[in-house]
Length: 420
Ligand SMILES: [Zn+2]
Image (cartoon, rainbow, N blue to C red; front, top):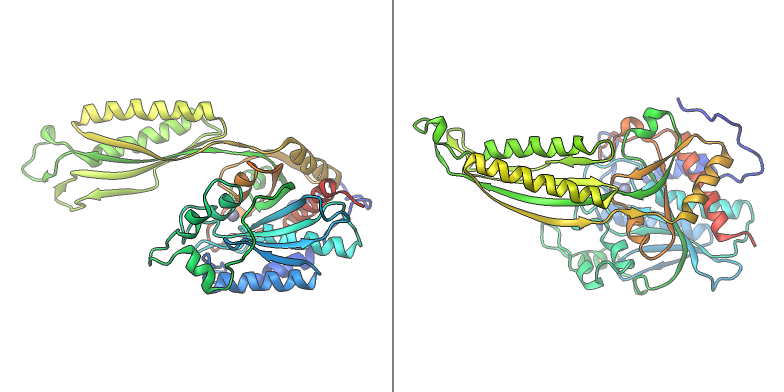
């Protein structure tokens, strides 16, 4: 079990870790799944119930509430000079269908805990402080992910966000209205002094190294591709091995190629084939075509470009040798994100002052903060999760990690919001 190497100094203010844990566990009852996780898909009845609980708690903490036109919820605690831009903390309250109790909602309730703790300590901040819920971060029900923070940050148009459809054809806008969270305030367009988000790491690095806090300095860039390989269907019996144009064999070689590219640019690169559709997918037919996806990630844009070159060169060889045709399309590009130096410094200083073991880390997944970083000074804080497992009902974290991350968040917010 991770322990603190240094005693926490009395001078530093701390949150009420037990209250935060209790709130997380109470929230986890909404949409609870049999294996101990949660299912709160964006804008479902469960998402509404989770939002309602947050709103009730925020009101009880004396905050004013607002909801914008894409359903982002803001709980605001006034600053001494309330005309100053807010320091904003937040994350998402939606989950994967078989999600865990911490992904996203930890950042939301840690934000609430910051507001509650400011009350406890009787602190007046110079800037207002807000805790936010960002709508539909997961992208599980409505694609793309992080659509509402994207609209807030001006990456997407509001109409685009509202018109996203789930598999049954319901739009995000209709579902917002149905659950009573189609707000009236404009989306974004206001300055923010700083943004912070605390999140479970969703990977194994912190736990493996026995560190409590990840000071997140940025996020990986991503390139997503769709590839169709076309050969020729023919009978598995009468067609000699030398005369085949087997699309699945080509796809298998592409899977190997993608893995080799990931290893070539290790340790920071990730390269994954996650989806493979074989046509006609019949046991005695040589596959005539295969659709597959490729997901490349790296924090350096130049390396991502080299990975792209390696993919195209390798694919050309595979296609030529296999007598295949290929159609490769990059369907998604996401530039690497560098978080703001003053916010990173605030996180690192708070972590060191609190005496937590830490390391700098790059976010491997997308987060709302990645879009917010485009419009405001932003940084993230990671805490470990057990086994590095997330997007899984067994996702878990130790209470002391949860408390530590919230303490770092609290002191980072204080340093940027200023004590009046
Ligand atoms: Zn998340």
